[in-house]
Image (cartoon, rainbow, N blue to C red):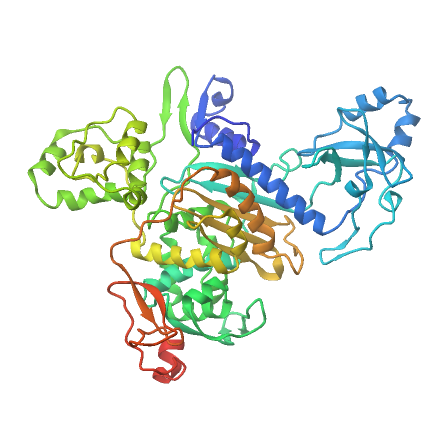
Length: 607
C-alpha cells in the first residue's frame, strides 16, 4: 500500500526520537518533512483492532466501577448548575481513547440511564447497554446486577463510547495493555504499529520496548533449528515427562504441557500444531543449546530472548513484539533476515535522507548464479555501471514467485521492454516470469538481505504453521477464509502474556496482550483467545481485496508418504499413510512396520 504520513502517536514519537538522534533538536523546528513506511489504512485498522480486542478482554472480566464517585455534587457545590456549565467543565477532562466522560444524571424505571456526555448533551443509555457483572478478580466476576444502581450512583462520572450498533454504551478504560506491529516481510518496513490502548494515558511503547516472555510463539524458531540438525516434520518425539537438573540452582525443572496430559510418540508437525511443550524441550535437548541459540540468533533476535537454559524451548526469554515480528519475517520471506525500519525519506530544502533497505528477493539472489556462468551478458552487466534497481521494483520481482504459479510464462522470444514505472512492470509480470537472465542490469548492485536459513527450511516451517491455523491452536483465524495464512499462538507462565504472530507472503503481524505489572491475565486467557482475535480483526481489514499470497514452494521440497506412527516412509499399500514434506536430501528411512517406541531402543527416534 502507499506509504504516507499519519497521526499515529506511538509512530510519531518514534519518528521524533529518531529524527533528534540524526539531526539534533533542529529536527523539531527546522522544517523537516519525514515520510515513513506506515500504511495509513493499515495503521487505522491496527488501532481499531487493538482497542476492540482489549475491550473484549476487559468486558469478560467485569466492571470495576465509576471513574469518579459523586462528581456532580462537587460541581454543583462549586456553583455549576446548568448543563452548559457542566459541559464546559467536562471539556477540560482528559480524553480516553475512543471513550468520552459522562455524568450520570438519573435512572429510569426500566433501568435506562440518563447521562450528560462530554461534547454532546443528555443521552439515554438503555439497560442492555449498561449491564455488566462486577469485577472480582482476573478469574472471577460477581453476580448479575439487578439495575444500574448496583453499578454506580447518580452523580458519578462514567465512560461511554459509540456502540458499533449505533447509540452509546457503557465502557471503561481497560487496565490490560496490548501491542501490534505489522511489517512488510520483503524489506522489514513497518506498515502499522500500536504500542498500547491509549497513548494519552501511557506513552510507553510496548511494541518496541516491552521485554515480555514469548511462550510458545517462540517454538517455530526451535523447530527451524531442528530441521537444520537432522530432524524432519515427520520425526517422532515422545511427548512424555522430562526432568532436567539445573546445577546453578541445584533444582530439577519438570516442564509440563498446558493441558496437563502426555500424548506419547508424536510427529513434530503435530507437536507444533498442538503446541506440545515437552516435545519442544526434547527437541532442544537433541539439537543442543549452543547450536539452537546460534541458529536462532541468525534470525536477528536479541540476546535477551535467548537464555542458555532448556526453558528456551518454551520461550522463557524477554523480547519485544517488534523483535518477534523481525524473526518471523525470516520465515515469511523464505529465509532472509530483514531489519525493521520506519523512516523512508527526510526532506529539508531538498532531500536529506533516503532509506536504502536490504530486500529479501529470491530473483535478485539469482544474479550470483548468473554471474558464475561467465557469460558475455554477465560481463557486460558487471562492467556497465547500471543504476541500482529501485526497492519497490525489487519487491515486485519478489512477488513473481507467486505469479509464476498463477500465470504461464511467455516464450523466451517475447520482448522484455524496459519499464518506466512499477505499475508497468507489474502488468508485464502477468504475461511472463522474468529473472536476472532477462534483464540483469535491473539487479545490479541491489542491496540484498542476507539469507540466514534455507528456502526449504523456511517453507517447511511455514507449512507446519499453516496447519496451526487450519486445525491447531490458531484455528480461529480460519474465519478470514484464506488458505495462505500461517502463524503461532503463545502463552507465557501463569498466563501473564498472550501472543499471536502470523503472516502470508506479503504481510506479517505480531500481537501481544498483557498487564504492565506482569500479572496473570486469568486462567482461561491464552494466545488463541486473547491475542488472536486482535490479529484477525487487523488482518481482515489489512488483507481486504488482496489476492492469496502463499510462500512459493522451493524446487527441492518433495512430498512423501509416511507412516503416522513412525514418521518413516510408508510401505506400499499402507492404508493410513499420510503425506509429509521433506527436503529432497532429507527423506527418512523406510518403515519396518514397528512403532518408533520400539525402534532403536526408543532413544534414536524418541530421544
